[in-house]
Amino acid sequence: MEEVPLEAQRSQAPAAESGHGTQTRITVDSPQAMQQLGRRIAGLLRPGDLVLLTGELGAGKTTLTRGLGEGLGVRGAVTSPTFVIARVHPSLTGGPALVHVDAYRLGGGLEEMEDLDLDVSLPESVVVVEWGDGKVEELSDDRLHVVIARAVGHEEVLDDVREVSVHGVGARWNAGAGLDALAGAVSR
Ligand SMILES: Nc1ncnc2c1ncn2[C@@H]1O[C@H](COP(=O)(O)OP(=O)(O)OP(=O)(O)O)[C@@H](O)[C@H]1O
Ligand SMILES: [Mg+2]
Image 1 (spheres, rainbow, N blue to C red):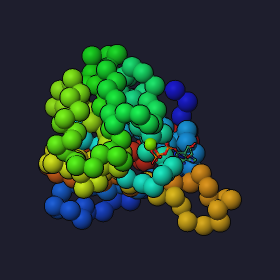
Image 2: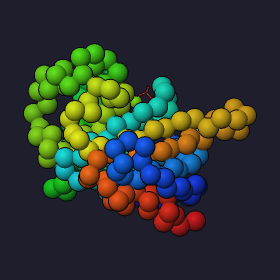
Image 3: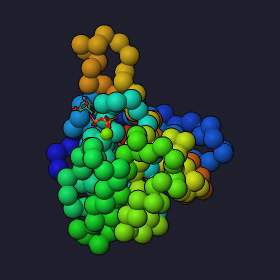
Image 4: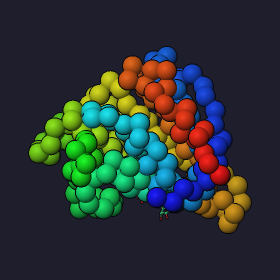
């Protein structure tokens, strides 16, 4: 897989919530780099992990999820689940399946998600939720919260630039669990 330089705008700060976890910020300047960040994050994930993706329409949530799917070695192309709320991508390598949820139209939150009858064990999967803020946190005390924001500046120059913050919440991500390496170990 081609390595794209990720701007190593790394900073660590104590997590605002719950006193646990680490926050890492990464500047991502292309869709390819976003996908690569997804592959890197995938390397930190284990069965049962919940990843929440926050960011406006077109921020790059699905692009990052595509990289997660590649990194996890799952079957099927990760696309925007336009007609379904969730899609299950089974592992091709004996690892966890990727459950990709688009909660945009999920009104009722968790109950509705459980009603989806996904035919997969969530504790044995990696669950990634777009637009899940305030809806699916109860799925797990621990979660990785990825916030993607467009960089502010001259639009024509910074159109492709995103500021990504990766924030581990809960004991699972206590002491960072490798988050600090996301932007750090960049070979340029
Ligand atoms: N640095 C970047 N990172 C990610 N995507 C980028 C970047 N620069 C440009 N893009 C473009 O922005 C778009 C992001 O689309 P994507 O479907 O990933 O967004 P999304 O956050 O999932 O949107 P939605 O809320 O509609 O689900 C793509 O067309 C991608 O090519
Ligand atoms: Mg999307």
